[in-house]
Amino acid sequence: MRKLTTYIDGNKIIIQRADYIEDGWFIEIVGKIITLYNIPLYGGIGSKIGNYETVMEAVNAGDKLT
Image 1 (tube, helix red, strand yellow):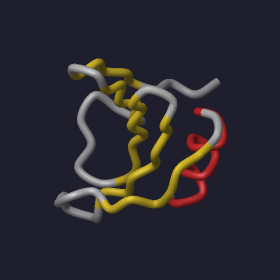
Image 2: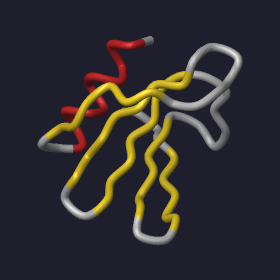
Image 3: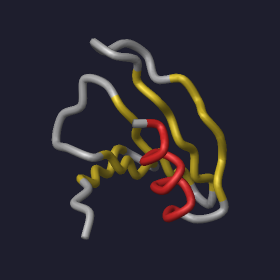
C-alpha cells in the first residue's frame, strides 16, 4: 500500500508522496485533467511530465521517475 498526501487548493487537487517534497513528483488534478509534474533535486519549479487518463496511471508513471 502506498501512502500519498492530498491537498485541495482552490479548484485543484494536489497529490504527492509526502507532506512536503523538495524533489520528486506530484499530481495536479483540475476538473478532469490529471497532470504529472517532476520537481528537480534540491527544489525548484516543477516541470510537466504529461497528462493521464487516471490518477493511478499518473502515480505509476511518477513511481518510475524515482
